[in-house]
Image (cartoon, rainbow, N blue to C red; front, side):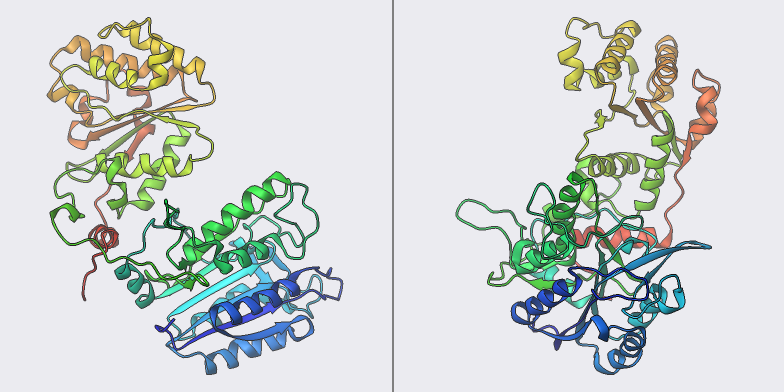
Length: 510
């Protein structure tokens, strides 16, 4: 890659432990094969540290002296460790350690603390860094306090590729979660988990770097998959999909993770797929159809790829709706209540629920002039309501709505039904039939009471209308159901401005 002066790697593999620590079978073999792949397929200069060379003193000397002297700003560095790892409970939770070859069982002073490793690495001047750790409890190493749900772009445009290279990329991929052991000798390509020549993580990693992870964009007629680029995100997604399902079938689930370090910005550590020509089309031309901003319009689910600045709030909202049947999203006019629910919450649930299909999400409704009619239309828009309850077609009767809901709950006992009523203040501003308004509120209160485990009712409401609903049929749930949408912080606003443009392959010049 001409954008960097040198591709450099430091590879550690340890099989032969002593001092009461059990030996491993494949760590050194994994490291040797990775070294070969990096050198021959990706043009890396590699420092090698295997078995008896990988003592604590040697590792510290290399981290504190050799790397700082050798690594330059225009280099990029890959750090790989295969060996034992351990998580020891501390005051703030599990503390991660790598186990050098000469470590002594039970003596943490002979281990390499991940905090010390991170400090040494963070002092390096290189713009791109990727750490890969194949050891037990690797996810306990506190790489970051948060991890976003990731999706690889279908197409990487030339302009986005350039930004991946220009911006800082400091990323870590781990072979196991904070509470999982990393398997040393499990064959991914068998159903019974016979002993293999590599750990499952290393086997998948080697496949990926040979080109296996270059699967975006998908293959089309007459054109093979891939664009010649493997980003760290694509690498992680390939490893996760390859390893998690295979190990789960063997009742030893292992879940890889990806984490940004503090120095990470918007870059991506990149490998070029061996033998695959680069296929990076230019970004679409700038015109009105590519406008990434919604202006004064709210975001709907189809705009979720342009909805930024509310990730943490979305996760908080999801946590709340999982714990109780009713949530009332409150905020001043213009704070983004509707966008949070439709473009944030719904999209977040769909990403989480791709495998189990636990959630049924109804099309968000607004009360309008006739809330019972609007609710009936919303319920019958769900196919399972229509197919299961064709004999009940009355629109404006509360009994019909209750019967439809009861039947659906009975037929779908393992599912959660998400009903979103947006702009709940329309019960006051547009619905002038007081009897229908009361029937509607009574229906909602009865549904929340009858189906606390299956129903998830989310209302969005302007704060200045809240006092008019506190003494209605929902009053017993109201206080605990409140979810306040605060104004956006400076960081939120920056994301809301910059990220939609980035999604359309446009960037701000500073």
